[in-house]
Image (cartoon, rainbow, N blue to C red; front, side, top):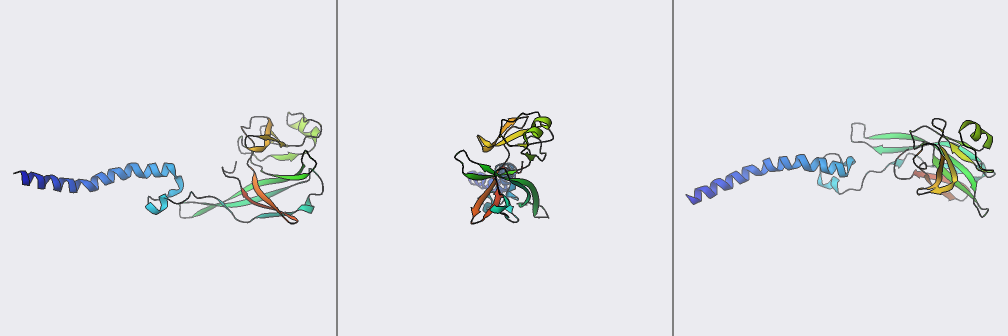
Length: 203
């Protein structure tokens, strides 16, 4: 009698394995997708891959001679691809940017390169080097010599020479919660090469 019971329990246990595995996958798969949203269908090889990161479509290059004096600036459009788990496979995003030649405190020339997407609600802001224009249109009176970025939608103002916890571009007026994202760039010989947007997103 005991042998029959043992055999019956064994068969029940074997038959229960697929059922338990099915229920486990219902919980494991969402958990993995929560930890790594871009992981796609649950697969062991995919789980241990590094998270997908955007990659630039093309680097942006400027000649240093394009910026003859402090506060010279140029706008540009930067494109990056993001992997998508759809039939399309990827998405290309275009990010408006600005590069500004500044002047460091010790007198050495430098550059800042920002995404122009306002961290408040995603409007595109501008570099506004004219102090009177800032005072008249953005509800902020700059200090003498202060040059700023300013958003026309909700009047957030950023100072490219002041630092916050994320680096340059401190919010000095308006509702923006933080400084804008920066582009990673290098100076190569006579050129400035804009390579990527810092991690964290577009805005």
